[in-house]
Image (cartoon, rainbow, N blue to C red; front, top):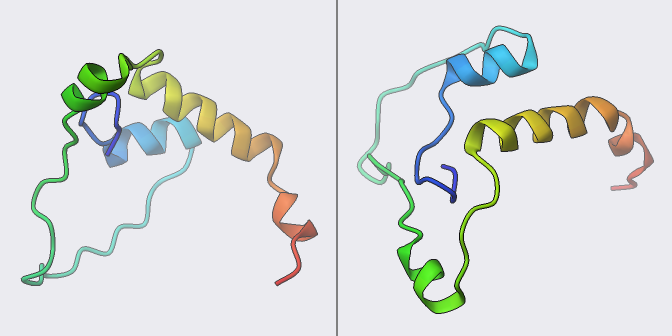
Length: 79
């Protein structure tokens, strides 16, 4: 989920931004699965004066662009 709105990106948005079709393998839910994970940012706003600066769509676009520009960064990490 996106902290800015409490709304997660859906598969269509991800596919469109990344230019690839998602391979989705839906599995039956288990009792411990969260049904809804939308965030409420009102406490962050009240206590910290924080408000989102970008929309989820812009954040997704920026994140996808970063990954495209830095696709080889993992090659430099030693595990």
